[in-house]
Image (cartoon, rainbow, N blue to C red; front, side, top):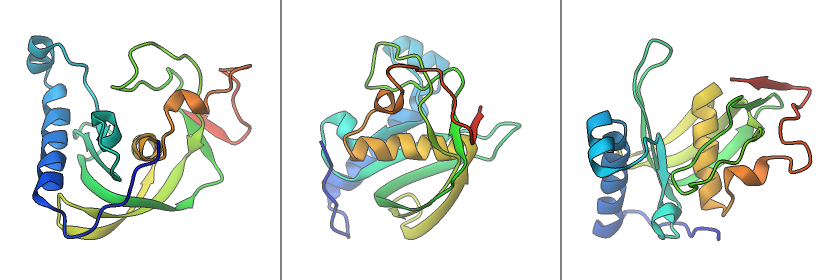
Length: 168
């Protein structure tokens, strides 16, 4: 189901939900915590995954040798630009809400521009993302639209690449 927009300023409950979501995602990436609490590591979490049909999600991608840390608590995000070039993860996507595997390529835009209110920085922002970061943002945005990653996989030919697509 599609999620409903939020009114700013956020109420206390929505603020607490966003903080819980970010805390959960960060903890899920800690191997000891994940093992002890039997949780899978994630890089994003959308409110609909908690049964809350509100347009908000969080992203946390830790810094590594390939990229800087990415941390957002986004409210009412909108994708305002998309590249013609596409991207897909060659090993496929996963989701904290989907226990079973769905092999295949989930075709997404290689680069996007997204506008949102970021509760983390307490300001309206515009994000220019490409590559993996763009995949994660689109994956979480899809949750707000009632779409799951496997809805993007070609059922008849799940591993078929598009002409203008990069695999990562």
